[in-house]
Structures are given as C-alpha cells and as structure tokens.
Length: 520
Image (cartoon, rainbow, N blue to C red; front, side):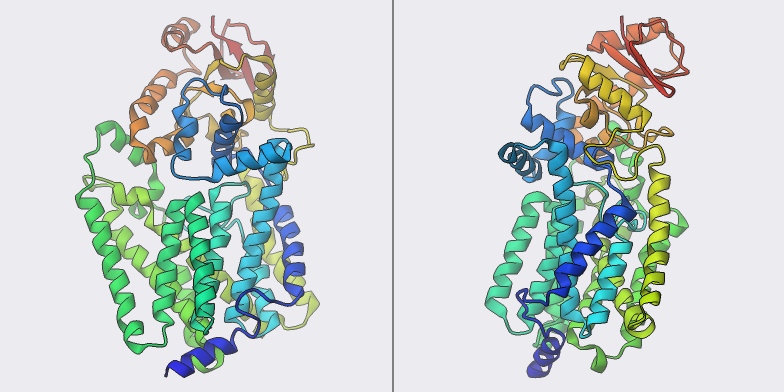
C-alpha cells in the first residue's frame, strides 16, 4: 500500500519535486503577470495597501504622523513586512512608490509561479497545468465569499508574500510524500517560517493546510484515517480554549467588533454564503468525476485536503464566529481566511479540467476562456475604483479628486498638522478607498473603516477610535463655531470638507469634489 501511494504521487510529478521545471512555466507566468496587471489593475494607496504604506513611510521618516501614531504603527507589532520593505527602500535608494510597484509585480509573479509548481505536482499534462494557472491569473482578484478578502489584492500587503509561500509549502509537502522527504520538509519549514515572519495569522492557517495534506497523503493507513480527525479535534479544542479564556470586552470594543460584519457569517448576504459552499461542492464533484486511478494520489489528496480544511473552518466559524457570544476573539482570528487555499485549489483544478476536456489545443478556445474569465474581473475592478486610473503607476498623474487634494496637502501643509474629516470618507463616492495617511503623509483623527479595522484587532485602540468617531460625526453639516469648539481642543488645525459643505473658513485648496480648509 505504501509503495502504491508513493508511486502514484511520483507519477503526477514528472518534474523534479524541488523545482526543476521546463522553461514554459516561467515564460507563461511572466506573460500572465502582465495579464494580471492589465485585468486587475494596481492601486498602491488604497484599502489595506494604504495602511501598510503609511506604516512603511513612518519607518522611513519617523517625523511623519506625530498625532494618532498608534493607528499607523499598530499593525507593525507582529510582522517584519513593513521593516523589510523600508529596508529595501533605503538600500535601493528608490522612491517607495517604485519599490511597491516592483514588489507587486514580483509577488504576483511568485504567486503564479508557486501555483504552476503546485500544478506540476497534481496534473500530469502540460495543458492541464497551463489551464489551471491561466484561470487563476484571470480570477486573481476574486472575492473570497464574505471574508472581505480577495485571492490577491491589487496592491502590496504582507499577504502578497505569505500567499505564494503558503502555496510553495504545499508543493514541498507533496514532494515529501513522493519520497524526497528531508530536503522537501526543510524547504516547507523555511517557507512557513518566512510566511510567519510577514503574516503570522495566514502562516498559522497555512500550517493547518500542510498538516492536513501530510496526514491525508501519508503512506500509512493509520495516519490517513486518524491524523485528520486528530487535527480537527485539536483545532476545535483550541478554538474552544481561546473562547473560554478570552478577556472580557468593553462596550466600546463590542461596538467596533459589530462593525466588522465579515467576522460573522450569520450576517452575510446569501450569495456570500454560497461562496463558502460552492467551492467545496465543486471540488467534491471534480473528485468524484475524475476517478482515483486516472487522477493520481497527489490530485485526490490535494482536493481532499481542501475540502477538509474548508469544512473544518466552517464548523469553527459556525460555533465561535457569532455576534451574540460574550467575546469575539475567535471571530477576530477570522478562521474562514483558510478559504484562500480552498479557492486556489478549486481554480487550479477547474482550469485544468477545462483545458483537458474542452480547450485542448484550440487557440481560439483558449482565447475565449481568457476573455470570458477576465472580463468580469476587469469590469468589477473598474466599478470598485471608477474615479481612479485603473493602473496607478508612479509616473502617471492621479485623476482622483480626493487624491489630488491629499497631494496638495502633502506639499503645502506642515508635517505636524492634524486633520479631521468625515469618518466615512473612504467609502464616499469617487474616493475609491484611497488612504489619506498614505497619500497626504499627514496625521488625521481615526476613520470608521480602516482605523476601525485596526482597533478591532488591537483592542487598546478602542477608546481613541471611539473618540475620533464622536469628534468627526457631523463635521460636514456643523456650523464653523461647532467645528471649532469640537476639534480645536484636540489639536486639529485643518479639515477636509466636501465641496458643497458650507464654511467661512479659509480654504486654500478646492476642486469639484472636496476642499481643504484651515480651522481658525
């Protein structure tokens, strides 16, 4: 039995398990990296990309963000990502925006390369491998159900690095199962350690997927039968212990937690819940349709691992990621993030199946697939950021009116200035989730969305976040006297208002959407 399992895995890995692949892999991956940039765009200062960028800028220039600094540095505590990018920027002597562009292209390439490596281990034919990676490139910004995550973001974050490392770790587990144990396990461990250095949470979930894959692919029948159950039981017990021994939460913190709807699957829309069930059903159907004899052990083991991982995460989330519980520590850990692995495997297998049985060697069929798969993603990304350039390159002039105002602020206000604005500014029409701190390089009172997310994972920021919401709650509609009375006492000396807001304050910058005014 052991010999049979090893032989089947070896049959599905004709290339060297340690990375000796044919030249077509890197060439394909390089071409697809350009496709990803064109289809999914690039927005270095938006969403979480802006959070990380502000932290990096603070490391490069500590005089930045002298007020509310904890919202800039909070995410730096457990990750070496920002210090590493800051060090790269210093050593390269390049502007940060150029370094981020390089990292985005490099990590996109590495993610697709890691996917190619995984494909070489679980698919025997070259068209199948190509089909899986092509479909992944087309769908790389696909949302992961209601988790508020995409497979890969159109900007650089710590997850940009942890994702390819997690995929490579799975590759090396399959290599270990195929007989190249010592070196493969060392490489797997190194990948997980590097992932943990930049994103401990995602690395923790990657470790879970590695353990499941190793147990389900073991040549020992006892381990295949019982190790998976042991991992599931240990995971459930760990989640229970975290929940039972979690520190009490203040009313303000619970208020913040309730703003993170993506923590609680019970609050998701119906189509977001389908995004959890559908990948598992698709994988199960493909597993049943392509029998074990023709598929090989690596194929079946990888799919079974994905189904087990997703199912276990669903159970943990159903039990412990509930808004009505007394504490929300497990919900804060977002166990459904494991669906990143589930989605990646599903897309690779689906693309491979289409390539083998539908596309084959027909160029026009491949062209149709790429067009049909990419077009919805392109349209969705344009809908997410309609007021911004689709690909925001360093040398291009921003067309977003909010970004133009933020750039004026960077060049015309003191470094120690403190700003206030609508706490919901980042979700305003035309703002496109562009980060004020990252672009303007100035301090601001905490916003509702991104700073709320920071406070939700760092409870010590709760009171500062709540105070910021209160101070800015009605800033667009207050009288100047009320604005002055509310904001001047906490050191605010500049405010950003929509162009239609009424004020007698001096506003040295204005455009069709917003204006920047002195608070005096």
